[in-house]
Amino acid sequence: MTAFAAPLDDILFSLRHVARADRLPDWDDGLAAEILGHFAAFAEDRIAPLDAPGDAQGCRLEGGRVVTPEGFARVYAELAEQGWQGLSVPEEFGGMGLGPVLQAGVSEIFTGANHALQMLVSLVPGCVGVLRRFGTEAQKAACLPPLAQGRWLSTMALTEPGAGSDLSAIRTRADRDGQGWRITGEKIFISGGDQDLSEGILHLVLARSGGEGVRGLSLFLCRSHLAGGGRNAVSVTRIEEKMGLHASPTCQLAFDAAEAELVGEEGGGLAAMFTMMNHARLDVALQGVAHAARAADLARRYAAERRQGRGPDGSPVTIDAHADVARMIATCDDLARTGRVLCHLTLVEEALGQSRAFVDFMTPVCKYACTEAGIRAADLAIQVMGGYGYLEEYRAAQNWRDARICAIYEGTNGIHARTTATRGLTLDGGAGARAFAAFLRDSGIDPSAWEAEADRLRADADPAAGAHSFMEMTCSQAFAAARARLAAAEGQAPPP
Image (tube, rainbow, N blue to C red; front, top):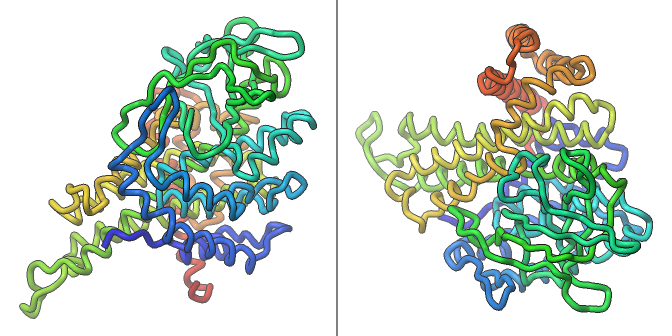
């Protein structure tokens, strides 16, 4: 009933027939199917069985170090040994060099199997992207191989007390120390801020090296261990007690003049960090998709076994024969499949590098639409299962608890709505909005009502006031376009 089944066929169908990953010059369809199939089997057999016990056991702090639930370190060692941490790392640094689109398929399966463990490893691809774009050759040579091998994991250390989404309020300080830097301050809500899975942790820290505002922020590499083998001056002051994701340690970290290296240019920290944040936002969107798919699977399997009521002929039926239950299951399935299409289309366009305006516009839309979809589907699964859905043993409750954070982190959904209604409509003369309208039109959706609302917001003295309703409209149109493209592909393509 509660065993995890990876939605492998749906993922491959979306990549092949809707997002058309074959447009990518390095796409190998047979290799993609083989790799995703291998990871799906590993996730079902080794990763997923740790999800429920990990949630029940949680993490604990012992002697200033985080201890993860039983079995997590063992399975992570298997994950690293099989090379999964280096999937998208260039071959010259010890990785497989297979690209972000395939990484996205692995990430969705991983989240569905065990979101808490996925949170501990999922920031590595974004960290690799930052180093490849902004790191020195020496930094790449020193950091990319241990990340690819799984000997190191990474964090994204932005948030501080009093400086959540407002990064301009960051007070963590970076001071020069000869050729290097020293970081002093406190960070909160740091996923994987400490753990007992990897030999080391590479913290990417946003800290103030100059004046006020975002222009005074720089990005730094801060390693958990020094070159001589001792620990750097980074300590865990507490693990947050959370509603969900109990097996993922969300830490408060104290930096006490910790040794660090500048990444990129001084004062360019926010631009560098956005490379990692944009990867994380699409990854979070796929986390929402994973929760929706998990909800659909839980609800469908339960409803196919639960007998209650009678059919038109008077014979007993399972509850999936009742119209309202069938509607809720179909809604969960639709939210997962259409959200996945939106993410895959965006990721393939990003990899092609030909429609930057579309990708920039769609990234916050995907994050908003798919995380809301994950929460809604998780809630519907509980409703399908009734009182049993409210019990922890049937897993629907944990799916909802774990999904709920997705609408909050990597920028709350309200922030992404505001971004879309303001910057998204005006950046580069409205290029992103035009690209989105073209996407609707190419999908057979009339964009005129959406364009009229976009024009109204552009003329509004306070467009942020209408941001939420506009984002809801945008997501509705995006889902309609994804639904149309999925239906067209199903009519033309052979079964997956």
